[in-house]
Length: 203
Image (cartoon, rainbow, N blue to C red; front, side, top):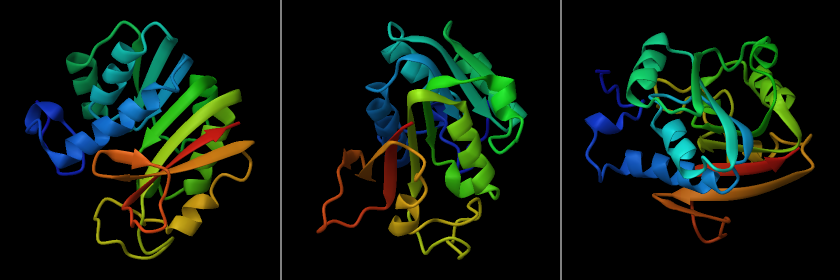
């Protein structure tokens, strides 16, 4: 059994009403409506979300590749969340060779990943290269003081401002922005402050 570190979401070690767990489940539920063809979950963690997507969309996806950089986490995911349409791999999201290793996808989801990656430009380049033309990228990240500034989270490189987040996706043909507070995911309202943003990008 994996140990709960406070950063990884491990449903078996958390109460069903845990707010962090519910927030993560909400993002996977949200992304399930976009799933089709060959899909990729970057930074899949313990694997519960990849398994959830596979169960919800098994008639619409051909394969779901789930990637995380920690070998122990991938071992746990393979044992606990095995599914006939899910393939777990231990890979670095910012590896320049990742597109060659994994190929291309119709949908890519990556939740709470960006803030952990020092080489953010390589991560963004990988995501774009692995997405098929017309494909959909769904990316979430928490907001903070901005690029290069301390954020108080020991596992985060930094946390972007809203404006910096909006500037990440100029190469995509269409980008829709959403905000999340608790389990609520909605288009941003000017009278509401949100801790986290979600981008739905079409290549």
